[in-house]
Image 1 (spheres, helix red, strand yellow):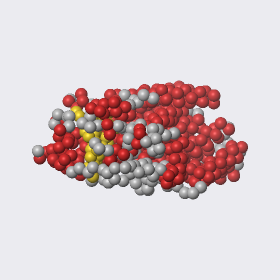
Image 2 (cartoon, one colour):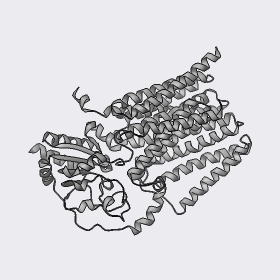
Image 3 (cartoon, each protein chain N blue to C red):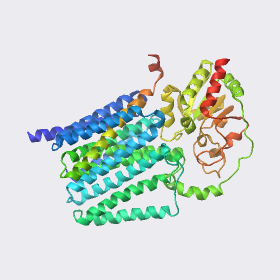
Image 4 (tube, chains in turn purple, green):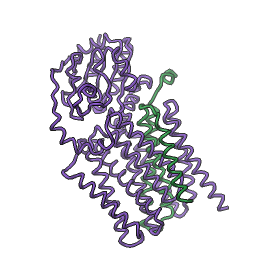
Length: 463
Length: 96
């Protein structure tokens, strides 16, 4: 009888793994993504039910813990605003990492004397989970603007990081020789603390504009930590699901790095070098910007037959996505073809702009990827740039000495007229001057993006 | 279960993950990330067995906290992903 239950439990885990795989596959297709998410949720449910049959001792704790967690999860998921999605993803990710760390701790606490393989798995779960947790927490702080989104670093930070990693390695080796000894528990706690510090130091030196890379990478870490937890309890469903997430996070990280034409090493440690290079790279852009009044901007848009909107992080800050869509609809009714061109790293997480525009009911078909828009840019009458800067900077194409040279950008400057909605002439996050703003075909509409858009909308309504 | 077999499964799953994700349109990157993030909450299975079999009070507390956090990760992750995906509308759906 006991055997039958064990077989059923294992079968449940296998079904769950298969559902995760199918779910992720479906998540990659727009028309099936929502069902894919439900398939994967069903897989999770089956895995949890199977696990409930495996554990039996203190059922009250289990039920209590799950009810508390579920309530918090439901409330958080319902209350969060779409503009706060990056930090929401970051904090959830951090919880997953911490959970894996604690699973490692609990297993070590209950069974200090395990074989070397499990000991290593425990160390990995604690280390990777710890970095994922504290790193996500800092990312959360930066995204929610609880702490400065500028890179924060101090002199000799690289040395400190190296020392921490070395100490973790040494502690881990001593720990592995005799995990059951009294001093090993102390070492274990030290490793936990150091991994948490490492996560903080690793992310705090990375600037807000590089957050899409960091979030994708931390996502990968929490998956790998879950995988390590799977090696501890010798459970395949954790290993498979964790590996899938780990791999997908790494792929996304790669895509984000490619979209910025930077290596992962450069993103992770670039903040440390930025201070040095900023002094040398003060190249000046010659020319004066051409300001424009909302009335004149209205006349340009009124006559346009093909319009492309290029949103950036500024749109998220100004919460202007609804106003953008409203203006887009007006222009469509006016007979123009309207598209929204989205750079892969616009915003603070992968796909950030797509989510905001979808919230504002922009149709999926109108959201265009950079590579599809660029070849058609010559035929565009007006390109409206809203709160974007580095992702439309032609210096990335033309000025070989520019720090962002080589980064793929949306060729906004090739449109017949470029309308830039911007607060001021301040440089973008990368601190690089943008020649687009002083080009002959560029008109600057200064002011808060949302307010400017509303002025344009009312200009259309009055006419 | 043999250790070699577990590592074998892990490596195959990594390759599978790479194959599954490589061709996802960038519009779906955020839901993909939060959806896979929910899956990484699978550590809930580890937390469940931990909280349920706690040897002493420390183990029980650590296990229970792990369980709460993993549950938040799973429930919050799936719901948030669902909310986002529900917003992505296509032309044919709009007309319905």
